[in-house]
Image (cartoon, rainbow, N blue to C red; front, side, top):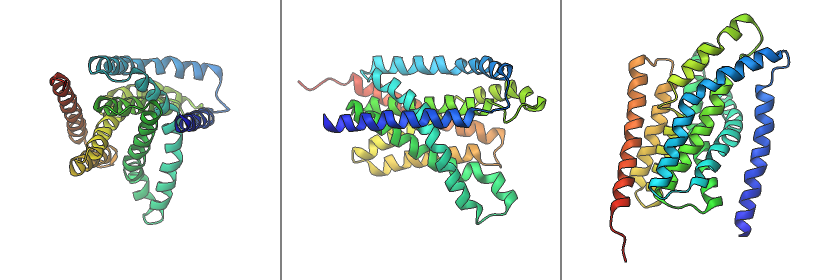
Length: 264
């Protein structure tokens, strides 16, 4: 009980820090109210994937006796904890790489060099924290915690991309375009990445270390492919399809496991 209380304190402390950090990052002093209103209205377009994703998580939790509380705990944590911390970790890693590359090369490759490793490991750590707090240990809970953290992270990252950097006409006119781009990339991104990554952790924790590490590696390579400057539409499609197929396979395995007769 004492350990759980300590973890809860850490959880809510990180939430508070995350709220402050994200508010500071997303606030632009020169913006007028109508720009924020436009950002808010446009952000509602993200519900196109948010609502179905949450419904999918609820269905999986109910069907396979997973923790509904864990799902929503993870979504909140992914949105407020992982997103805020990842900003600083990504920046630190990028600064390290910048010493070894020309400015142009670094600018082209910075997202691919930092995000696939920093973000996936941070999301995993956040998901594990949520599981420890709620004492969740089932196979489905590994998938739900990863899915929830990834979804929360995806939502806040998308909002960050939608908000223009300044109040110039060109930036404001891109709000709608940015929203559409984020929706198109949502299917095969963070919520699926994290769910598969956590299944890798599940296998690793159950003694299938090679299988677990391979799943984690697949996610990071997939994330790298998505972010690299050489990516084409075909590469993006392959990256999305690959990770979605693995996600579906893991759900099928969970379904088979749930249909096995219980030992009396």
